[in-house]
Amino acid sequence: MLDAIHEAVLAEAAEVGLSRLSMEGVARRAGTAKTSLYRRWPTPGDILIDAMYHTLPQEVPTPGADDLRGDLVRALMLLRGVMVDGTRGQAMFAVVAEAQHHPDLYRRFTEEVFDARGGRFTRTVLEHYAGRGRIDPARVTPLTVDIGEAMMIKYGMDHQAFPDEEYVARIVDEVILPAVGQDPRDDPS
Image (cartoon, rainbow, N blue to C red):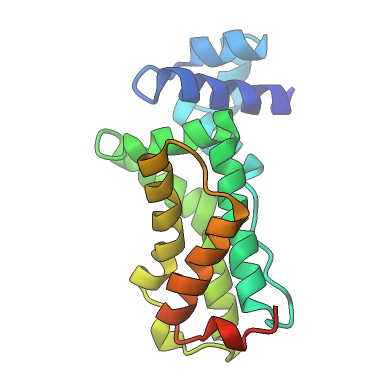
């Protein structure tokens, strides 16, 4: 039943947005009573945060920190997977797009979903490599950790499509690796 509720809240948020997200809509989609939802979650936003925590993919860099390029490409491909998954992607982007109107939910999204699980996409990889002395920690800045995601989202906006793996590799080779002081030609992958 928990999976059905998670799927329902993601679909509801994707379809109606955060302003119209309601316990009634989630309960209807999940095929359960509102009272069942209220026993576990006080608000529909709480269900959404719980669903995102349990359904968004988690980056797992190579333990030995020996494939920076490959780990960055895989991390951005995870993001692509979320973008391509209409329901999860639209729900995630609803939280981001409506952050100005729902700042508390957006804060919780970053803190309770991404930060609680170790970060987000390229940040996770770059901090892993910096922590193991494979890249200069001074180069892991708020700007460098956001470059990959920003380029992915910009591509989607400009092309109304999702970047393919070749484009993702170009983001890594032409933008992220140089930004953190790495020459992609020196990477073994």
